[in-house]
Image 1 (cartoon, rainbow, N blue to C red):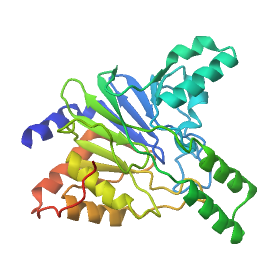
Image 2 (spheres, rainbow, N blue to C red):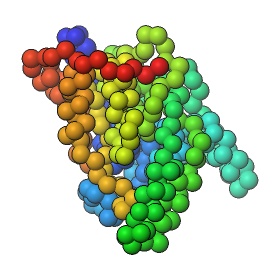
Image 3 (cartoon, rainbow, N blue to C red):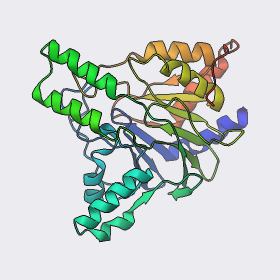
Image 4 (cartoon, helix red, strand yellow):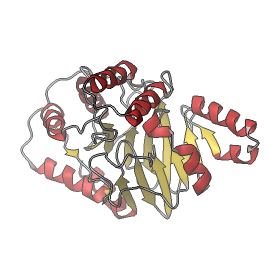
Length: 309
């Protein structure tokens, strides 16, 4: 355990992260900037508000996309064109974008759009990324139900109705991947899930080493918490990095309380939870500090939980 702590600490000052709501992260390392599921068209009434009101990335070497939901992919084509970034994305989105570029006569941009392949490895500025297929959230009925409730309460504006349609229609049967990101020099790793998952498919046995597990926190789900616990028990990370708990599309969404999730994870798994501040920079040293403090406390044996197959 001590060697893994030192391993993370050795690179913590070189890997910087910022969270910009939903599953949007900016990762900086060795002069390179990676954007994970960037969603820059966040409504101004979202809560908490972004510092300065808007997120407008000025540079990115690569954009990594986990799936095609509106809040994960809709801004990517414009960002890629404006920033000149290479985009890595699931094969269904790659096929769609390639067709669009050919139809619009922008064939020169096609080389910058690259599909994830299972088992394929991509090295980006000293970080090695591998994609694993995951089950995606079937949220269409939930979104339509929420929209109907808000309409009956007369809280749903025309813009909100348009948002509900986009959210429901965006790739209902889309592919989704989890991204295993490893620091090549030390082997320290982060497993990033942009969307909800009931199962990670085709992981090796034993699964890859995971130091930090980035998990989205959801609402109105009967199964998600148990399956999140199962995934934590399967991968045994040192820290869980929680995201997607903000009220990013009111009145269709609401902010989720992290406290209950943290209590469940620490009680059932013995793993600490790190809650990032919106727009604030943090490093792997910050995550390491949470893991160290947790390891110094008296530990109870984790309760048995369901594992993902």
